[in-house]
Image (cartoon, rainbow, N blue to C red; front, side, top):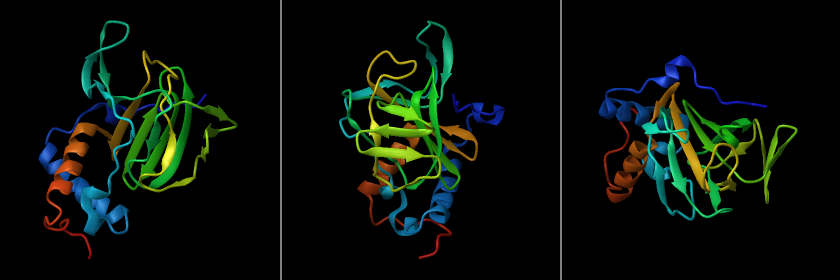
Length: 197
């Protein structure tokens, strides 16, 4: 059983969101070729058949009734709906445990994006779902099909738990989605500071 466990530093939230976003933009530019021109527009919403958000990032009432920290965004979708990679990178970890269920961690420079409650199976450290076959070290393109919505792990209905960490700190995925939407609304915005053309 492989488990994605946050370190003590991961459990804290960064207090200055605006300052963090500026830093994130610089890191994305350094981590991905072409990001200087594309900025956040390159990011891909991970669920193809979006039904709604069922749980936010931060403190929430957990399934057992007590309060708990929720390190991601739960995105409801029909069972079997395609899941795409938010950003290009490499599979860092294939997960199979009682909380996340079947899942993947993809590393993109200083980012790690976590996908939980997937459909499919994990055998010999390899995740398979329909035509998808991924293992630690597999390259992944942004927007690539990486799995399907399931009910694995601690789940009360079909959804994707999508988590994002930056340099070991959990981020609110809604903040990243807002940055992606803003980049699409203003495509002529100034290039990312410090990025090479």
